[in-house]
Length: 457
Image (cartoon, rainbow, N blue to C red; front, top):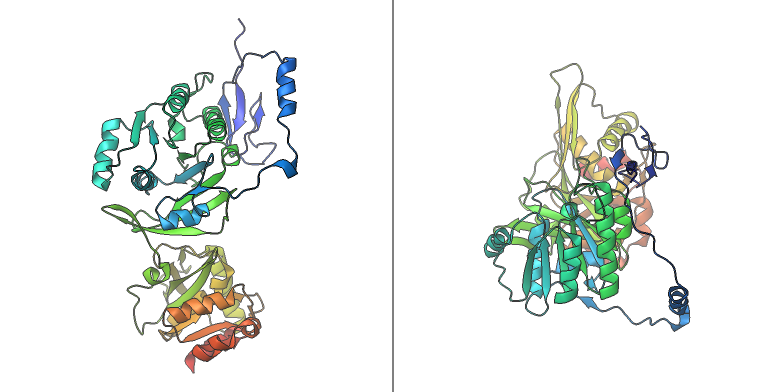
């Protein structure tokens, strides 16, 4: 019998080739081609009956039932928000994140919420049943309908699912699963792809929702081929620093809902707890009458979130000034500093510049530009921004303040939290309601210089 030749598979896009490439011909990524053994499957003879059955399965679009999909509430409001209202029957959800960030914890808590009313199968390839029991005791999980299976063979898992008929299945994790038809080791590109395909077919054919835990690589992306994210229905990422107690659950892909929503959780001894008011959490402990701080408002989906931006500008003791940014793009901070020097006359030459977004939140929206600039200038001039002042707006290279979306929602959130003055782009002022203009001191600005003049008056 001839020995099967190995193939090279791109870990980013799944492209296969019989020879190795330094650069993937499809996606253009470097050093992503990994050697794998091909999957050998026995050819199946196609019969006329199978072809006939496939033709019978075709339906007209008008004949398909379009009733609203029934969703299962997890009992965790923030998790339901990210999913789009709850778990869809027959869906395949991929949950990724750094080690120890809370993936297995949140899934066990969902089991506690749903385990009294439905049968749940928890499949673990990393821990024994006793280890899961110890973690469940620590989290207070004692539901009656939670069943544990410590197994890595996909064939045995599928047979168990068909015999037990659970209402929900959790796979922890996909990188430990193996398929006997694939000769490569667990966690390889081929194994991850084939095992996910098997779980996807089981979820669709049996109508059972699957939660699949995925590990991440050193770049923060889910380990395995990029096609893994295309197979599943929903991709959720847990974000946050391990040194912080707050976690953000972000939907990257969702076939049954919006991908703009986020859920905020706090890690406690009893597990993850919902944070229903993230703005109040981000602003807790904010210093009063201190230079170098300004409050920003960013939109996460349909939810406005207020966060404190801190800047520190100090004389440098070296020839090249040092610049650091945490929670904000470094290149965008450098651009804002260049605009401040060229258009507003605030010079940072010979000054070390540090920027930090408090609470572990990352501000990727251009609307945070104005608050970043005001925090840096406040520290440079050592003049504090008023504690009740909020600022948002995008900064252009000409020094102009450009309009942003959802201005009224941002101002309403600021008013709800007690802010009395809002510095906004001039072109957003007309879209605000008269009630907001009466209750909040709205200051529309056209340029950076006019924004700084507004806080020094």
